[in-house]
Each structure stands twice: as structure tokens, then as C-alpha cells.
Length: 142
Image (cartoon, rainbow, N blue to C red):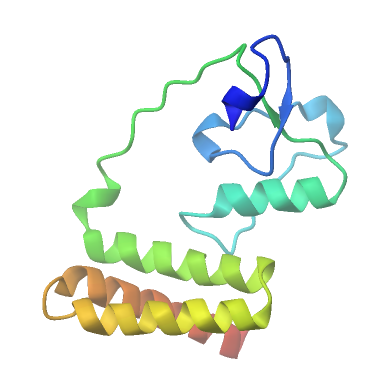
């Protein structure tokens, strides 16, 4: 938590930052860093940070800079698509960054939760189901 660090601390190491707050010092790269094209929306910033940190790049936040981010209203216009992309990216991220047991438990929880909300929130549930099927299709064909 930021309050643990003195206000004078210039850079505070962290595990990842949200894409809306991501600033990249390109002088530290011999090439332009890229997001993984397997992600369309959601979790691509987490994956980006984890991949480059694993390559030895540093990641930090600072109190010396503030970024104002206006959340998009576009993604909420089609809740089914939003949930599809979010679910797919969530599963992809779990597969890449957790162990198989954690993945299986989260996958089962997600699937059960989706079935339980189907009568009450069909758009959300259908989006989650579409995300699960997209993920499974990618694992089978990929």
C-alpha cells in the first residue's frame, strides 16, 4: 500500500499497473514492447507488466505524477460482449500465471456462478459462457 512508503520516495516498486496509468521508458528497450495479441480487452496490462518484469525490466509507481483516466462508457453498451472478453482474458491470465489446481478451482467457480446467475442476469451469463467457450476453443485449436 502506498501509505507504507514515505511521500518523498521517488519510485515505489510494484507488480503491475493498470494500462490507463502505464508509462514506458522506451530507452530501456531495443524494440517497442508489445501487448500480447491473444488479449483483446481486459488483463492485457497485467500480462504486459508480468512479461516484461520477468525479462528483468523494473516496474514502479510514483507520487510525482498523476494520470486522470475517464472510464469508457463504450464497453458497457454491450454487456454480453464485455463479459465475453473479460471472461476469456481472465481464464487466459489464470492459465498463464497460476498453477493448474488454482486454474481448475477458479474455472469451476466461474462456471457454477455463471449457471446460477443465468435466470437473473442472462446477458452477463451468456457473455461469460461465450468467454468460456472462446477460451476452450483457443486451447483446442491453438
